[in-house]
Structure formats: C-alpha cells, structure tokens
Amino acid sequence: MKLISAIIKPFKLDDVREAISEVGIEGLTVSEVKGFGRQKGHTELYRGAEYQVDFLPKVKLDIAVNDELVERLIEAITQAAHTGKIGDGKIFVYDLEHAVRIRTGETDLEAL
Image (tube, one colour):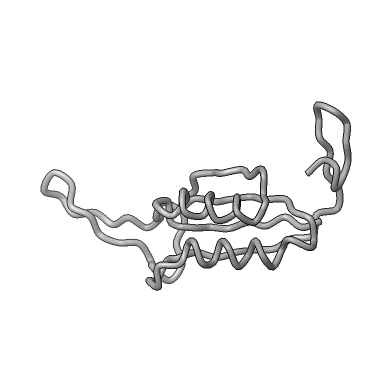
C-alpha cells in the first residue's frame, strides 16, 4: 500500500477529483494548505497599500491506494493538474504500513 500526497493549485481540484475517479479511486482527503516553492509568493495591493504574500494557497490531497494503482494515479493527477506554469504542484509517494477502517475493523487493503 502507498499513500499519495499531491499538492496542487486550488482551481484544479475538481479536474483532479474527476480524473482519479476514472482510475477507480473511491476516497481521498483534501486539505487547504499554504506554501511556496519556485513561485516565491507575490505582491498584492489592498486598500492602497502594497504587501508581500509569501505563502500561496494550495490544496493537498492524501490518497491511500493499492500498489498496483500508484502509477495510474500519478499519471491521472499529473495530467489533470498540469497547466504548464510554475506552481503546478508536486506529488509524493510514501509507503503505507498499516490501515484500519474504524467502523468495521477491516485492515490494510480491505480498509482502503
């Protein structure tokens, strides 16, 4: 089992959700996060005052999957989140040792 964490632009969330549904993924966790990478933030004007925004809004997706779906899922996220501009995001893959569905007590693959 693997845990896929993807950081994407917020406006791409619906596209990515649709793409991962087509892969057969039934569940994910979405978090609103802030961060920066090569984008380095930007300057905004508010009520006549200019200020620096160092952290940009992003969306983090956490998806637990069977090993066989990892490459298809990565490809689906990459294609759906791609704009070709800086700040499209990143995908991280972690080993997932154990999973438990709280309601039923099912473990590992059955819990996914």
